[in-house]
Image 1 (cartoon, rainbow, N blue to C red):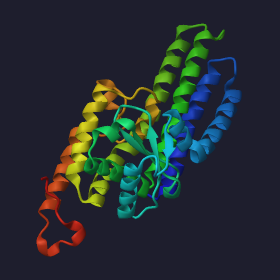
Image 2 (image 1 turned 180 degrees about the horizontal axis):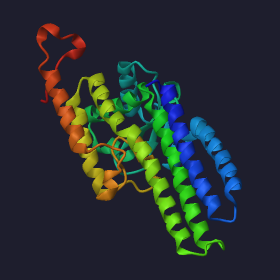
Image 3 (image 1 turned 30 degrees about the vertical axis):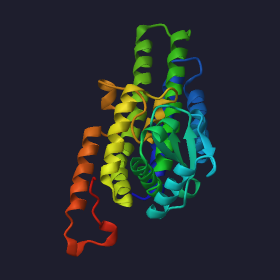
Image 4 (image 1 turned 60 degrees about the vertical axis):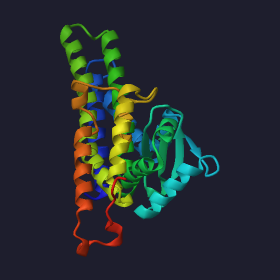
Length: 305
């Protein structure tokens, strides 16, 4: 789908969900239906504008990420430059997140305004080849313009979660709450809005992760290194989830940085790690056994030493 249409559709779906929360808020509080609808619609328009122009800054700020120069972080800057050239996109800015949890994400509204953020933990954990695989994954998101869609989804989904909590507490303490039915509706509205926002993120995120894995692995011609990196990152993030941040932004990261299991795992914005590894192993086999007569220099096989 065209990136512009895809983004517009996302804006529309999340706006309607946000306004729906407003309608319920007005119905069961003293604000009134139409007043609440207008307020939430105005707020949704404002959130869309902020998400489009400033969502990347909001995400970087929420994780205390700092943009670094080549002098401050020469190794990661060199890797990002090499992968950007291989992917055929402008070199993005590089930010470092002060967290021991190893992870990475990309943000920005287009390739020219993109930022690749890595945690201090991932710089210490991964050797250069595996780190290059992670950066190639993020560069694939940048090249396919996924970062705007995913960053906007994270920003607005966070706002929907906030509005749902606001609605919940307002209903609890409202003078108009004179029966248990309203309390039940409030609970359903809160849960429904949160699940709806998550499902929208899930729908646009899971397949993008598979695609970014494949494109990233092909960009550096090294599925094995990306596979090893994902295994390490998955295990470390399960044991030591990230210290701060909004779960609504989980879809931005290469692996889920927040602890989740059971029912929460069913609504994860990331595909199952076993399936990601399985697909990379299949890609590795395909790249290893391409017939020599059909192979170009860029298709040369990579073998684990």
